[in-house]
Amino acid sequence: MEAQGDTITIKLEETNQPNGAIEQHVYKLTKDPEHEVIDVHINGESASIDNVTSL
Image (cartoon, rainbow, N blue to C red):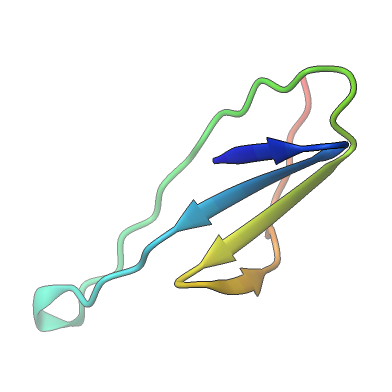
């Protein structure tokens, strides 16, 4: 993860699982008020976020 200006960039690397198993992960991000944008990259490519919950 790195922050620059109003953007937080999260960099994830996806690996192939044996026997094609799929794993689901849940992450919690606590951000500073000046951060407006969350940019997620998986294996170097921009990805969309399926679900966001705010507390």
